[in-house]
Length: 457
Image (cartoon, rainbow, N blue to C red; front, top):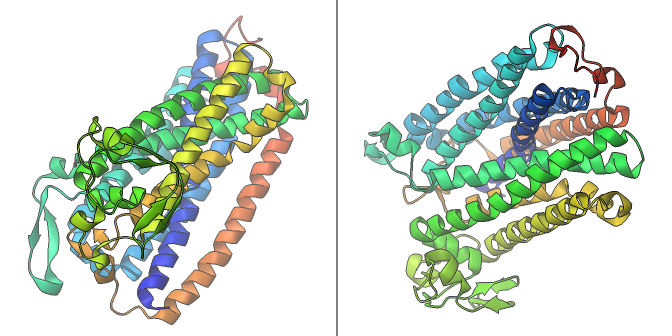
């Protein structure tokens, strides 16, 4: 393989592995705020027990996420030096903002969250929990800002020519609030909320199946299902808004999502199928006019096809691969709505705990957000190809000049070994915490956090 292909494989492997953990941290941060907030409001010790248990899981995901995220920043300088020089003024400012406004905020209050339960007042501890949660969200904000600029670049001009050309910010806020930023941010956060809530749902359902910690499991499951259902429904709305932005600002990507070659009024929506790129034909069940309606809110407006948006094949992404990834994300998204709705309905009627088939489905539901998040990221990035910065810099032009193929292969092997080891450690420690379960001692809050006269549920 050439250096370009190997470098893309390397970055794909590292970022795909890293992207398991930040959504979990963001979603679990929301769950911790809700659980500890309920404890402070009601005084029920079961919520204190829940908050302390899930804090341990949050700490594990946060630690692995930090360790795996550092590698990617080095890759910008090693494998993608030309890209880094070209967008350093833009991309670097967003990464710096993440460090200042997100990472320092999150890590600064993390010690209070983890070790301050019996050492600081309850309000201060809750404030620390909120700040950690906010910091995790700020991290997502600045990363999405940087990536959205690559998708729909605004607020800049090009300085220099040829190999010395680089993008320079002319309007910082125009760069931050680009055409696709807010829709993509909302979509990303909804996926993170799903990841955290469905992890809580999965573990709680497993405890119920094993008849362990029944009160803890029921309370955790209730909160997880409510947040999971709300996040899944919001994900549907955010996905629709994001797709309309793609139709307006990245028509090639939308055409690839649906395998649409000709600009078509009353454009059909393909539910699933296969794209023959050589024959330029998509096969599968379709809903007439639905793609036009989803993209433009009416069925008559044409949707731009690949022939008009990208007449040259070298300006198009791999069509079938993009099509399959996008439809996988959408299909899993609807499945999560169904699972969360069924779980919430049966829980509401008090019959969920008798339906073991549904509890097992809830145990497996933890995989849904991970699959959808990965498929969504792949479809967004692959659908932008062959551009690393849309319309400005091709992926092939962003490579480092001095990196050789054998160097990249060696790093892929080394990173692969380290990441396998890290994942094994993560699974082992997560399983150990789940097998241990919540501590019964946490049902009796002590120290400065105790609520006088309301310590017992």
